Image (cartoon, rainbow, N blue to C red; front, side):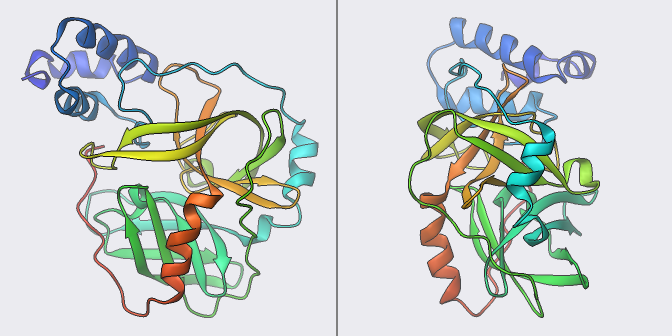
Length: 276
């Protein structure tokens, strides 16, 4: 019903996240509180590759914090950057989807479920060549996918389950737009328990997340949020209202899927394509 209110020309005008946020806030003000309707409207209006972090249409704002210089961000990431790998997903939903993954255990890389959803062909680009990834964990609620990659010769990045402090300096390491690996300056701006939706805009899910002052771009999905001791989280979304605000799932929430992947041998289904 809500999607029917919009023409294709208006959808083109609403391509930016700021415009979509304003329109959906207006809808929320006049419509009955039916979250599933709003979620479908967001999926219809969205050209963003990221899922929405919060089920509420009016998203919380977070004050920005200071971030390291680009040189300092590269220094933070230097010890682990080679364990951050480009992942390419294709064959089921149209054009190839590029994202970021990182090694979390021997032969295992982690990324976002929305990167690989509906895509049967998964390739991880390693320092020694392209490798086929076997999907062993597909968690569309939390937005986590884990791939087994044969002959993976780079070390794992340590997950740090202890809660980071607001203001902690960090780097987001990844492959924005599928291009070269970058280390984006970042700072922990907030520690939140976010009630959002699964990657299909369906059931409600609660995620422990970091709000991060950083410019998150397509291709950064699955990027580790790195401090000098390891990864404190994994990027999965960005704000619709603040251009310099991203969101990362806390490392502690990733650990159960990691442990399950270490006990899983066979491949799992890759799910359906996401609305975006």
